[in-house]
Length: 484
Ligand code: NAD
Image 1 (tube, rainbow, N blue to C red):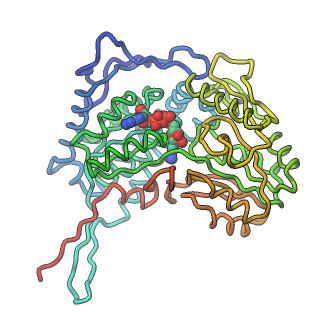
Image 2 (tube, helix red, strand yellow; image 1 turned 180 degrees about the vertical axis):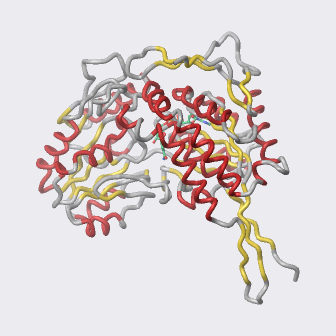
Image 3 (cartoon, rainbow, N blue to C red; image 1 turned 90 degrees about the vertical axis):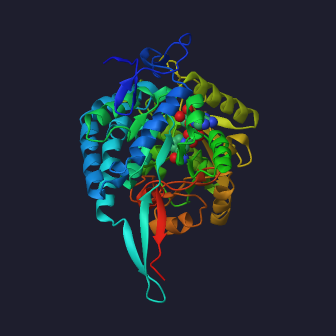
């Protein structure tokens, strides 16, 4: 497949950049596993951003256009788009794995189908629900409460799950009647071209979905463009904070899905070796590059060595390899920058007294940006490795006294996104899960579901995606009062 693109997709057309710096050349993407070239795309600038927002604005403001379509008509168009994406699913999964190093076994079951699945899910939801309800007031007056589309959305997403995170925004906002400028991360802009191709083939009107590949500068220009009505951001806490400040100045609604440092509370009755797949998935999914992972593993102090051994076996026995190899459990990190960052954290952890019981270095095989799956012991919750998001295949095992202490440690974090509780007694685990101050918690594993909202508190962001809450976040709730 040829992934060298010289145009980008706006207003239903493939166009050349209006203001690319001719001396800068295209952005080149290399395979995370091998460093070999995958493809390239043009470097865009502020005039391109304005063009994308203008197209989304015109599509939204068109009186007979997308935002005025019936929910059923929108749902039908979304299902058509889902079919186009589904036809490309295998290619989507493979390209994501090439770009960011996600093991193909994961990308083929998640990224490959995420877009089509979420489009169908929100199409069904919007079909079922009325956009208008009558609320009878205390004096018998009939008030009309309407859910109206919010407008033009700037959707800015990171590289770790480029398809799933794009459609976590695009599917509900389309269902709500909004239009969008989607800005993928530079590292994973190539797979966004497959989204653009599917949109071009589908029955969506021009300008409803525009795909603006590029980096931070393009994102920053998009976020503050006057034609944008809402910003939906997923990424780092640092970038989220900068975007929140700008949106506060503009009084622009913003949802922020940011980083995490979640805890796995391992209760003293559980045998982790009977939950291998679930534990790896909850703590190390996508080579540790997943926002909600339970990377602080809290275990009873009285059984510290026992659980350190179990975690070491589960994590250390994973197969490290090329992302495209079906046998690979752990692939490379997305980039050299990311690997340097993770290695910096490992050095810091050692300096603070932590010891690696498995991993801790670079595997010998492979040209890519690999770090061995690593378990650190002798960590306490105040050390940097326990407080900051590493975003790599690194777990730390921290002892706790009793269950109250475990809950206290889990909640003693600047973040509040995910978490897990592990016990043979699911009722007891559920009771502990209710005490954790985060947006989401899993019991004996972590498997999110589009019916349930997803998001965080504290440094992990604000707002919720997915579920009916996700749909409503793209709507303006308007009340029409009857004549007095
Ligand atoms: P990042 O913040 O550097 O970049 C994310 C996206 O934002 C990219 O598209 C980037 O180009 C853009 N961007 C960066 N700075 C910007 C700015 N000032 N204005 C506008 N756009 C800007 O994050 P990353 O390193 O690519 O992704 C990893 C981070 O994402 C991790 O912290 C991870 O926890 C977080 N994440 C969160 C969730 C969630 O749902 N909470 C999901 C996945 C990843």
